[in-house]
Length: 458
Image (tube, rainbow, N blue to C red; front, side):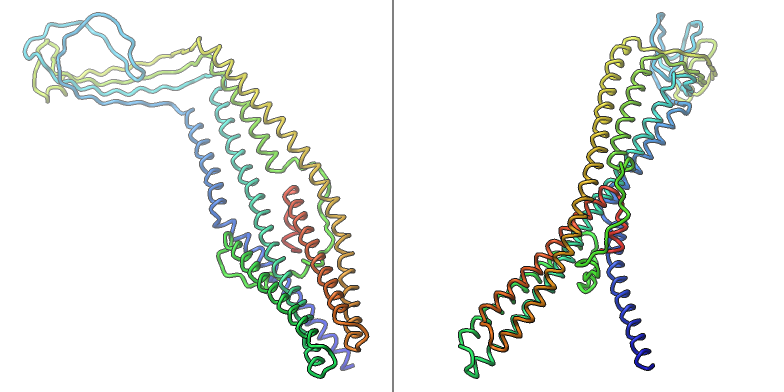
């Protein structure tokens, strides 16, 4: 009974320990991505692009508001009148009156204040088309941001896999060095007792030095890969947390159904681009139509010339003799010459819209085919990993048997080192196959925009 209780407690402790290690590993990966989303400069730049587009959308909407213009003038000069006509600039209106003879100063001061309100009451849908185009630009900016985050997420995962691979590679190198060290220790003892030639001890020590050199090189690779992660995660990384529970033995991939991913940000961006240029073509076509506006204005005028025609040269008199006027009415403007030009511009925008529509279809097809190809590749690679793992187990088992025969003097050192080399090759082949497997899973996650499997299992 006591023995069963002890075994149950030991089993539970092992499960909790494994869960804790696995949780730490997943937490590190999530922490890296969380830090990247918050503070990475590229993410902040894409966020600013969206905010800029939203502000532009607000600006375009504000064009529908009445346009109010005001002016204030205070001048000093001559006042000789002249008959005739002129084209006044927008924002001004004039009020004519009868001429009177002036005496007194040849110069007088004048004050003029006016305000003109212009409201476009009908423009054949141009304003609404402009707003729709601005809204499409905002949607495209958001889609671009999503596409950028997916590409960035892929980059982070690839660098993370490189770091995990470096840790696993270093562990295998240390394991290989330990095996050779064990062989060398036995040879040294046998050489000292005269049972083995000294050359065997020298050979095993040479192999040990080579294995040590490989370990040093792989340790440098580990430091390099963790340093590259600091681009996204500036905190110090404990390499122990990079030892993934499922890296060498991944669980079966599931949850990625083969389907046409019409919501992929890349295709959505092209869709918005096509719709935007289609809307621009509509805007250009409507720009050839007339514009109907309501106009209203008010003006205050002061002058140094009084109603009897006497002109004062004093500056302060420019605020005297006030006159107030207002004006309301409707106006129609139509640039007839632009009909041809805007028609050609509309045709050019329609061609751009067609171009992006074709690119969208191409993108959808490419994503569908790439997703299907990746699923087939990953399925075959998963089967390969099972064979590689079995090959490593068989090689290690054979090595143990050959090592026992070597200690009994049944085989020579050369044969044992050859077997050891076979084990090392099998382990490295398995590790390289595992890395390639995870790389393809990352590519599939990019195509499907679903990284949950990687977050939960890598």
